Length: 96
Length: 96
Image (cartoon, rainbow over the protein chains, first blue to last red):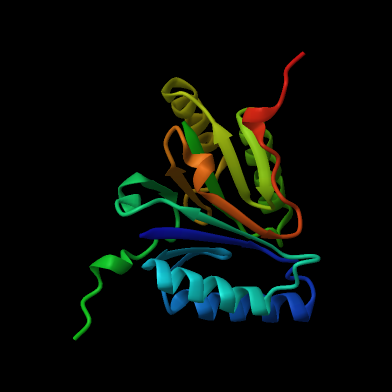
């Protein structure tokens, strides 16, 4: 399934920037970074649970906000991009 | 329908911050701000086109990135929040 992860953290602090980097690294194991704090992931239910657990261990729930949007199997068909930095199609990447 | 708008802009410049404020004002006419640059909007197809046109007039397409995710009619059922600042349910707001 296609899951969007949006992460809101105050990047003015070094700790915030570190947490954002770590969350980005986790998400990039499952998909791609399409904006500074927006990640598009392609996962099955086990991977989704695994990803959420890892992210949960990194964030500071008192000040950070994470939202997961499950767009289902054909979620990528419902995305429109305008402007700079279009995202990569992670499902279209060939693994050689 | 439930449409997510994510906006990536360099807020280190006053112009970037101004554009983000303007995009936020536009989106907040159609929904709510759930993260610094993530907006959840509830719109019909005419309103969606209207909103996209207004946003298109504000952003700098050479450096800003906007993504629209159409989660359909029951999109709100597929959102999960973790941590601080949960979003308001704009569909649940009573207009008196």
